[in-house]
Amino acid sequence: MPNTLKVTVTSAQELIKDIRLLATCGRSSFRKYLYEPLFESGWQVEQSSGQNRRKLIERLKKDSADPAFLQTIAPRCKKIIGISMKESLASLGESSIFFLERMQMHIVVASSIEAVEFADLLNRHFAEFRKDNSERSEELFIEAVLEADPDDIKSAYAPVKLGDLNEKIKLDNEIQRLYENIRIASQYYNIPKCRKLLSSYIIRYSDSEDYARDDVEKLIKALNSREHGFEDDLKNTIAIDLYYRITHGVLKGDIYSTITSIRKYGYIFEGDSSAKYFYDIDRLERAFYKIISDKDLWDDLKHKRNGG
Amino acid sequence: MGDPVLKITEKNQNGVCVITLSGDIDAYTAPSFKDAIDKKISAGTFRIVFDFSGVNYISSAAIGVLNAALHTLKANGGAMSIACVNKTVRDTLDVMYFTRKVTVTNSLDTSINEVSAS
Image (cartoon, rainbow over all chains, first blue to last red; front, side):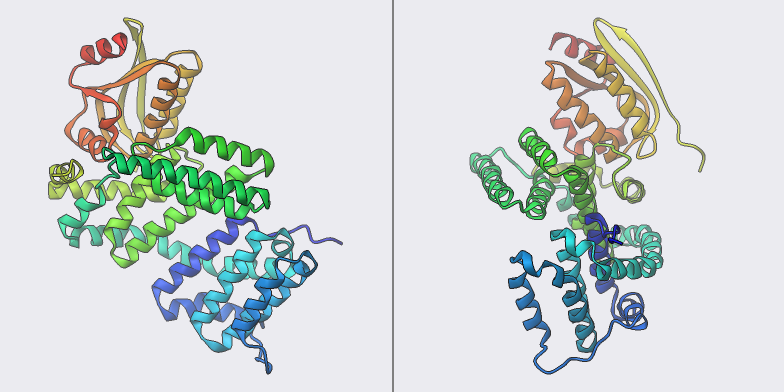
């Protein structure tokens, strides 16, 4: 019977986001939520002679270009993860992310028994971490804003200024380069790369004053007609990326990154309540505005925004 | 926390649709705000003034809704203006750069005249 299950692009991206956040939270969380579940499920393997993890990864990367080897990627990724568990937690994190990235590139990998088992295992154990993290975020965010230097908060609202002609030209060049890169990626049917390029561009420029919105929308439509579900996956990619930046910013006390990402999220999703993390981010934003009002920082923010 | 409430009423004045809002416009109420605007735009209304005299709070989700509407209105030769905002809402619109894109006035009549003449 064929395996009809598969790890979706969104699920793989969320797991990568969680692994990165786990790394920020420290070794004990990493052990508890990633290492131990895999160990208890028998994923750890002894390293045989000549089975250096890095070499195995390099070899696998080369083989990935050959369709004849696609079926071998998932079992080899499982082996790499097993070996990395003996090496270090950092190796385990890298290998896990490597496997999850391959799942996004090749449907054969995403549909493999190993991928489904891996994602299912992680999802079950990450559920508790996600819940804790979401609850802690608001509290940590308030703490971070209260302790932040007002100048940090102000700089978070400094816009991308396009009054200068050079900036305008730079942005025009950027969209041209994006078109060219996406054209090349789509010629090779490299949808994951198209998604990544577009996601980076949208996150970077969506709140600027001369965002090439119509051009971006045309590109998305074209790619969506070529790959059904592209637009939804792109939206999820952006939401996951911004939520990661926000949460990572909260955990690191990086107020600039947190606030900037909240603002970008607002502009990109335009009140679309179906967007991932819509309500989580709204909660943080309300807390932030309350503190700005309490600290009477609105005028400072505006002056900074206007270049004062 | 009770159910979020955003009261939305509409009227026409000098060929302009005036949408009056009362309450908070956040993630919970932004979808109904978006529906109200989309309905007007679908019906061919491209000149809209928002009366914010009863709005206490606005989030980036709501500003995102306004930004999307502004884009559609402009693409159809229309216009938008926001009237009678309180200080907190004005401050939020400012730091979200939205006041660079749309006129915000202190009087409903001024907004209506501006949109009507555009």
